[in-house]
Each structure stands twice: as structure tokens, then as C-alpha cells.
Picture 1 (cartoon, rainbow, N blue to C red):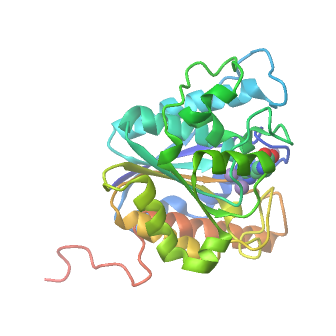
Picture 2 (picture 1 turned 60 degrees about the vertical axis):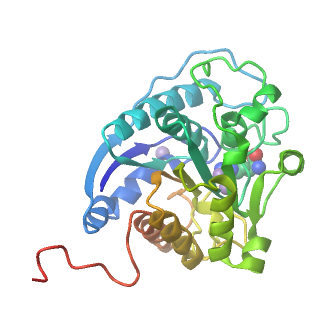
Length: 312
Ligand code: ARG
Ligand code: MN
Ligand code: MN
Ligand code: MN
């Protein structure tokens, strides 16, 4: 298997400094080497560099020009990596980057299903958001059913919402804004919150999610993993922590199942902020990140197989 890594040091989708350093600390934790141990051909494309688009602002949407510049560049880069026959690992940065990575994935593979692993639904528009932070809006920007709810967004003309909300499933929700709940109910969005994880267990939740968004087992899968889906006891370094989240074990199991489908072509890993918490907190959170990413690309807790040719 071949994997391409893209770093996205973007933090203007929210207000806390530090999440832009996510790619740097995750790479420093030997990300490339750990993936190579799985027998993968890994190419690190480095961090994206983008130009801010100088556009008129839009009400209640902070840093639109920065966001538009970053995500349009990321979309191009994701398409390029997929064209080179590699699965894509995008490391953030805040969750607004999902607009670029998923747009690029859909442009390249057309039939895409997304698992959005998050404490939050990230389903606000500029009219419903209480924060004005774009990292709370990516799902609403990506999905065609929600296109009518947006004003014209200068700088975002390259991005056409081509993903149906029926192809998106949430796992891990536990902090949903009022209007987000309204939208989830109106469109019947596949949404498994922590109470569902409690009730059915993570194993059944992942299979139920996949059977809803990809019943024929034919789509290209995209996992957009927000580290705040984890319980803050296991991953404290994130800007919008919510208690009562997934254990690392549940997150790893989720990724193992998706990996075994053999259709995971893109993984986003976002919202790790190494400027939040103590040094020990950062170590804990970065270790969790590495375990989750490894599980997505084939690490087995049962141990790795001996490479072909050595046993005989
Ligand atoms: N719902 C809140 C908002 O819209 C929080 C969003 C948090 N998003 C995230 N990617 N951590 O501002
Ligand atoms: Mn900084
Ligand atoms: Mn998120
Ligand atoms: Mn979140």
C-alpha cells in the first residue's frame, strides 16, 4: 500500500493558538517511521503553503479569505496525491480543513462516504453559528442538501457541494447546537452519539454507520477524525474538549474496522493543539493520535505478520 501525508498548519477556523503546530508534533512522534513499519510506502508531501484570498468578508464567518485559500490549495493537493495512487493522510490543523480534503477526495473518486468522528456535528452555517468559527461549519459547506442555506461566499466558488448528506455518518457526538439538532432531524442524518456507543457498543455502531452510508460496500471511504471525539482524559490537548467521550480503545477499534474494509482512501486527523495542557498531556494526546492513525493504516494489536520471504 502507498500513503501520502499532507500537513495543514491551519488554525484560523477557531480562536485558540497552537493547533497549527499539530503536524509538527505528530511528525516528531515518528509518524512516518511508524507507518513504514507496517510495510507501507510512505511519502511525506510536507505542509501545504497557500495564499490568502483577499475577498469581502461574510457576516459571522471569521477569516473567510484564509480559509478559502487554505482549503482550495488542500483540495488540489489531495487530488494530486490520490492521482499518484496513494491513500491520503491529512494532518491538521483545525477541522475546517475537512472542506478541502473531502472536496479533493470527492472530485477524484466521485462516490465517497464520510465517517465524521467528533464530539461536535460541525454542521453550522454562518446564520446558525454561535461562535462564527469556521471549524464548526465544514459539514454544512460540503453537503448539497445544505447549499441553499448559505449566502454567496466570496473565494469559495471552486467548491461545489457534491456530497450528499446521506453519505455522511457521525460517530461520537455529545455536544450539538440547537440548530444542528434541527438539521440532523430534518434530513434524517445518520448520527451515532455517545449514548449509542453506550447502548450498542462501538463495534455495532461502526457497522451500522457503514451499512447506512455505503450499503453496497462500493464507495471510497473518508474518515474525518476530530481528536475531541476522544475523552479528554485520554486526549486532553484540544480546543473544545467535551467530557464523556470515546476511549482510545474504542477509537482504535473503529479505525481497525474501517481499515479492514480496504476502502479507506483518506483520513483527516485534526484539532490536536500542543499548546494546551502540560507536557505530559501533550505526550498522551500525541501517542493517542499515533495509535489511531496506525490502526487506520493496518496496525494490528494481534501483532504484525512476518514479511513474505522470511518464514521459508
Ligand atoms: N458547535 C461549536 C461551534 O460551532 C463548536 C464546534 C467545534 N468544532 C470542532 N471542530 N472542534 O462553534
Ligand atoms: Mn504558533
Ligand atoms: Mn470537528
Ligand atoms: Mn469537535
